[in-house]
Length: 68
Image (cartoon, rainbow, N blue to C red; front, side, top):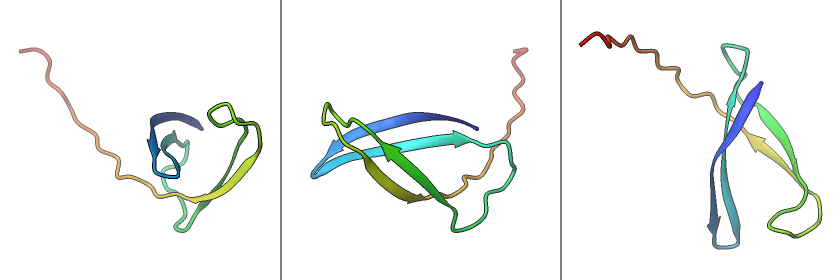
C-alpha cells in the first residue's frame, strides 16, 4: 500500500490533513477504520492516536489519444 499526504491545512483548533492511499485491493470494506498514530506535530512532542473512517473513491480510467 502506498500513500501520500496531499493537503495539510492549519484550521481553528488544529490541522486538517487529507491522506490519499493506493491499495492493492480493488475494494475496501464499508465502515473500515484506519488506526493512525502521529508523533511530533508542529514541533510538539507527544503521541496522538486516531481511528479514522475511510472511504473508497471511484476509479476513473481514460484513454488518451496523444497523436494529434
